[in-house]
Image 1 (cartoon, rainbow, N blue to C red):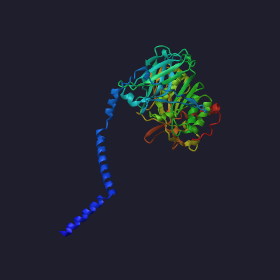
Image 2: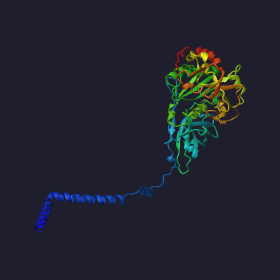
Image 3: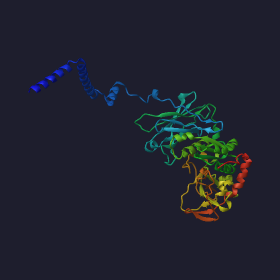
Length: 489
């Protein structure tokens, strides 16, 4: 008992010593107060915080609703970014996106189609056009007379057959009830694009076309066109073979003749080697090269082919009798003792003519040409044609553009007039699929047969275009000289 009392006394003495320590008392009191403060703050955090709904309700009750339909709330139109011509005479195209996220509309071009009508070509959000009902409104504002503006509802065409991806192609037709700007006074075509959601009074207004005073010549709409034939090329992309482009260009320049023009769209495929091949034809006035690489920002079908051909249609609609749509590994052919002019003159009663495909092997060559094929042109050495039956093959086509309102890659579904599908006896096209991107000699297998089956596909010997190679080479030499003689694969 005595020993326990002694121990208790020692503890009491220790407690008194600690308590009498001023520094220790201050430390303990500070810790106690901090714990109390943390508890209070944690409580206030959940009892005094306002929700976003409370804030919205509070401010809404104090401010009147915004009237989006008032004249003062009409947004300023987006300025128009214009195209430019480079030192190489390349037309670098400008793209004018408006909106946000997947842009509401991405304009590529806008063109007058008559005294009172215009076409605006661009891309729209595919989900919006498939699952909603977006609309367009067109307004013509004369220079110097803003109060004289005229507004109508635009009519939209979706010509890409549902192939679009994030974006789908949209052609907006703006046809006014009376002539607008046809006297050359100038003005602005302003388009308002909407989402089609009636619950949102929202729109994007942008300048689609600006006509300076004196810049319009309406006689072009009734005058004979400048060219007989105009080629509208799809997007060129990838690592293209300059020699294949050279051969294709010489062949069709000869076939189409002096009153023809070729519009080629560079989506990344016109590298320096291809540019060297095109430059002589640009200098001769046969070719216009357009840089459309910026379109890769906007995810559409196959490098935006449908967008490109529709822009080409409306941009050159009044400049040619006939407009052709096919690729740079395809060669148009007309029967012997005829010309392209005689064939198309005989078919002038039709707005559209489609061509049957003659698919050629990209590997089979004749044994007698072995050793010479690196120096031969593609249609000179690839002479075996695929004759498999029951296969649906793509067709290509030509149209009289003044009677077309929109177009596609393989045909147009928006024309006025008749369309002819069965023209095989007069005009076809030979297709050397994949050869334009092959940077080496395509001849992989050499054979002697006139008929054979290779890799499960039947072929026959067809030297139709081979027989034309000599005349095409002489035409090239006569027209642009020998500057392309050393072109590499």
